Length: 563
Ligand code: ADP
Ligand code: MG
Image 1 (spheres, protein in one colour):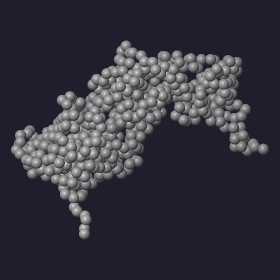
Image 2 (cartoon, protein in one colour):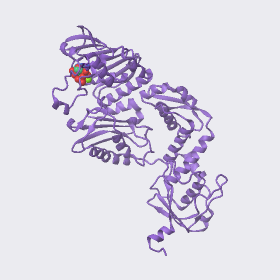
Image 3 (cartoon, protein in one colour):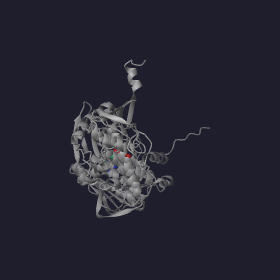
Image 4 (tube, protein in one colour):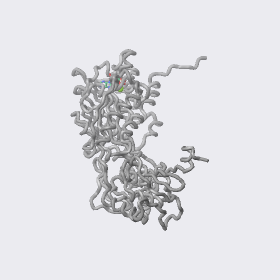
């Protein structure tokens, strides 16, 4: 007896919904994409309880006639592609004809739409047609989704907190606003406005409302072209950088995608200019003929496949890199930092005063008595980066940046650990700019933040910090607070010891002597002495070597002098 049965439409749609609709933001995304495809210039998204109670998307697009309003709920019914060739030249955001039937399969959808001054309202619930009636509406479409996931308890269970779901939606609308600066978006939740864009085609304005006015002031604009691709966008001056790559927004023919190699291509333009694991805030628009990309490789179309991918990466690098490096302003350490350097590098070495080529001897140190770095004589500096030393056993090359980093890292760590449980009230609160979606996520972590010694109030787009731990380094309070806030938001486990360690690394890297910097003999000598006081003088905090040696035996071997 045959056992295979063709699934009916309702079940098929529920299964399809499982692929497209995992969270509330997916519904919002599909509805907004439809409004964009309908050429709307004004799109309002109204949520109740982060969309769990209701999601309403209203647009002033082309609308649908009575027949289309019903057809739209049928699976694989679309106005966007007509034949197989269209699939290779996709210009619209939707094309699979799956979204509306999928959403309707797991919720109640009331669609009111108006075209050529005729309006109709149709209602579907749990994938079944309920009713159609005459309605009144201005040109455009209004879709209200309620009872989402009511009949799919498994999905319901996977939803995170309302705050988290809202944050996802705010983030989504930010991306739409960046992709479509000519469309005006308005997002409200429980009657509270979460985001508005004017639709006046001003990308800097949108970046200012997402990230802060300060970020918008420090943007570098770029544009470039190759045979297949043209790129355009904004990226921040190296002074502004963030601890994760969420701030790099990529759009291909206006579609927001995630692509770590493209993010890394942008990140590489900042090599040496910003600490490791930090990223700029950027928006990159890639335009190309739709036939050279494939948007049909991901169920939610978040990843796409490029032809001539390497050429695209090269275009990004050659366009952005020169602008970023020429914008870089070397930041001299702050006054109190200079004081610290003097303290650490203070003792002039006796030999230096007496000889032209001083022998840098091991200093007497009360903390670490082991002879870790040998006595050696300073010869000079190579490439403004490596210090050359010699002694009777061979030659030594010392990476001056790595050494300075190690010295500072251990010093910062000591100072921070010493004061780990004290806090201090700030006379003037610090203003930490936070994109709305992050502010929403942070609300859930306020008590952890206060356990950490940070007290603040979240206001629109920022947190006003009134108290910080005493181990926060003077002049770096904002940076430290940002690092902790980002860690909390990303739901990583937050151990005080780890965070102190990370921050010490960050600071040391930022303020240490950079490569390509000429230093005097006295400074070289002081560097070695300070290095000797370190617990681990052989590697920088990121694990790169500080000192390498070439033995006399090796050198004699190269010149065939070995007997
Ligand atoms: P797709 O977007 O892949 O075509 P959907 O299921 O999302 O599939 O939508 C089906 C069809 O319904 C669309 O092709 C479009 O013709 C119509 N439609 C959906 N939403 C709107 C809207 N807001 N305005 C006008 N037409 C719409
Ligand atoms: Mg669609």
